[in-house]
Length: 114
Length: 119
Image (cartoon, rainbow over all chains, first blue to last red; front, side, top):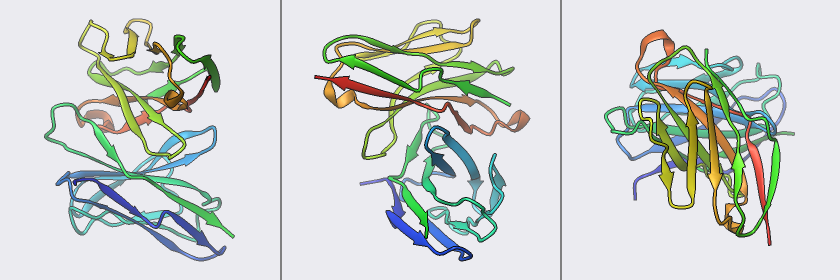
């Protein structure tokens, strides 16, 4: 079945360490997105990519980095510069040629700093 | 920049009754979509309903319908015959269409309304 796979489901990180969250899709979608979810804050956009080898900052990009070397993959690195990384992270993709502009979401990664 | 406001952090409803969740938005765009997403305890984001701004007719999907007031920039969700499985966080979201002005089809979310359906 086509979809988005985020791994791992739960991730623990020590302060000062970088960590990479995986997002893979087999939907042949061109656009991919990373959102951060905090209680009472809704979803906020971190980074997005509309095509391979290109990506743009979202509203809260500081302390994060991404790459888009393959159409299927859009990993997110949470660096030690991110002051409050504990959150739920959602990856999504969009069919840019689709008729309804809908997003498909992964099941998320819960990151906890210990 | 677009903003989406959900003024009800939490709501509750009795099973089989009707409930309405509020959403307002602010934008200078003329071509856009509005969405309601549901996030149950599993945290999977599920699309509930979508409204194209150019359509005057309100969207409906089974027990879910919207009241889209374009001039007032209001987009409320009505859930009829509420079921226990409707218990979830509900997010209102906005998407400007096209790549001008930096919109790039990004989704902007409200902060959510936690809906509890009581038996």
